[in-house]
Picture (spheres, rainbow, N blue to C red):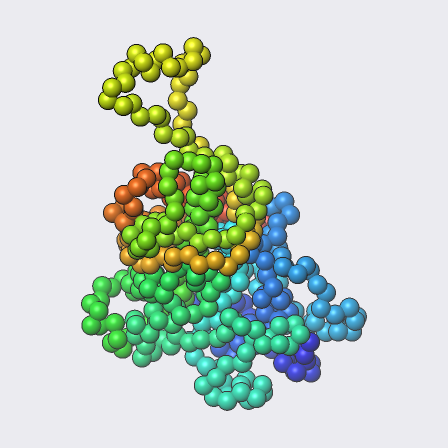
Length: 417
């Protein structure tokens, strides 16, 4: 673990401490590069679990390989404590965790990836100290000093950029690369275009997307954040929807849920096999089983004949269908699903109604990943749409719960200041 070669032989007490803010108050590019490289290696972000750990109401980083101690040597430990303070590791954790989207699968590591989209290259001094030439970025390395895939710096310049360049940079970035097999490039590009048009508040024809434009730091940060959260919402929604369909199919329901031949014609194209489900998640999904369709009467069968065939038990009233939002939400959102790689149709942007959206936290989810009923299959359209809408409400409900929790914590902290 070669931290010393990366950050120098001593902790400079006069160095500016990063705040990890995005937008107008962002850190200098040099400080962003150094601090992001440090926290990535120090906190082993490439080994983060799909969901944060939770102890009561407290969230924390959770790792797929356990909470390993990087070095037990007291001298090195003290040195890291100084570097942790210098690079504001505590503040970084707060920024990553204090976000209502923390309950979305793989959100924390992808929020980090969104921070790695900078506005310019660092100075020559920062690059030359690591043996890197101009126009290049240093690679992210793990705690054993090995290069790590799917984590990299990229640039969206503020001057002389274009809508096409911004959209292409976002849709080809590593943001949610773990789930690119569930949402294809065309759909990601459309999400990026929607984010740009909403933040910049302009309607441009296709012939104008290559024209040179300038944006502010705040606009750049908002575009990236909006894109990140749109993709995060869809991936979580798709995860719940697919699990319901898999469970519903195994129960012998008369509703056909297999994917259609054309993935662009059905919401079933959302289905991506995750392999065997977590047992707890499967148990919780059992509460979602929709009632089977009643028997159909043949033209020759009268109501009297039907009544004779019934048992003399008293008539029972119909019960309402169970809501996805009533499921045990902690199990639904926090239990990982095994990911046995299997081929499945990808979602294309043809299956998505790209309606206008709002970037505010209170209205953001209302316009995300809404599937047009015109694109649903003719078979069992009503049931599939019903399930999709229930799943969407469950995700929105969970986000609202987290938003209220964070708002309450913020209010309490303000009272004690």
